[in-house]
Length: 330
Ligand code: TXA
Ligand code: MG
Image (cartoon, rainbow, N blue to C red; front, top):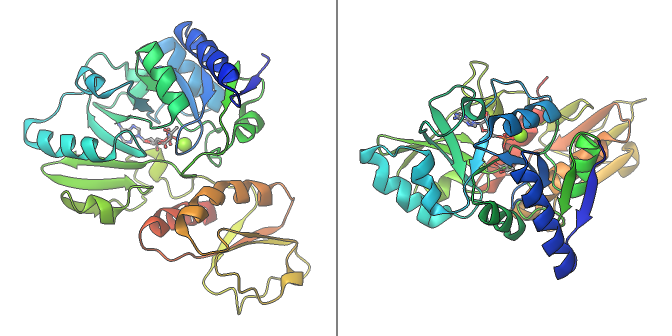
């Protein structure tokens, strides 16, 4: 299959790209689309055969459920049954964080095919704020199942080129709308009995959520709740080691080592084959948007080792550290 990568630089190109995506989705095909977090691989969530194509293209195991992206808030109660006692909290969270990088796992209704939820009785839902994604969902007027557009276990794509590198020849269309805004995947939570549990850390931090209810965080675990919680995930092919202090660290001799830097204080620049800075001005938002791109670039250099410096673990830093911990786990 030929994969078309189309740009959206002009209004005309954008209109054409959106129309093409809607047409393909209507026919039960899958397309690579930008969201505000990472690029997604989308299918009509109510068409099980279309959804099966996502699993095939990504080589994703069928036990790993997908996130469903709603065209609008009205669709929420067509997809999920809201528990009466959590209804108000769920609405307040939706009012505050939708559209945006925030996913809630809620009890599913019959209409959601089992393949989407891997047979679970819950479904993950979110509403994307990306203008291209939003326009496509709204023109289709169907919820879209869309995981990150990478092959299973690999680093999430933050540019259309990354999607192309991962899925060339496997999907008919990728829409390029530039690098994504947040650079890491949405925050995933469950809301139950008035409590919020964070299953995957992301742009909506525990600090922000604690304004709404008591917040807990489920630690990554071998006992599977969702594969996004497997300790090893988002992994580059090159081994990655985390270090605390770049000022005192010296890489092993006779090894080709790359460095993913936070502080900028490196002992010996010459000791590294390549250095990438997450954020020269030590801004966690900027660091998040650079994280996966830098990891991908370092991963392509054929290094023996990538060394990554820990970032402060408050706010968005916790989500970045979560990705780095998993990338270092093998
Ligand atoms: O930002 C994002 O969330 C991106 C963009 C494309 O929307 N999507 C994304 O999807 O990261 P994916 O499939 O790569 O990650 C979704 C995670 C997976 O770890 C999956 O196991 C978990 O959500 N998940 C989905 N449905 C679930 C459910 N019902 N219960 C528990 N975990 C669930
Ligand atoms: Mg993913």
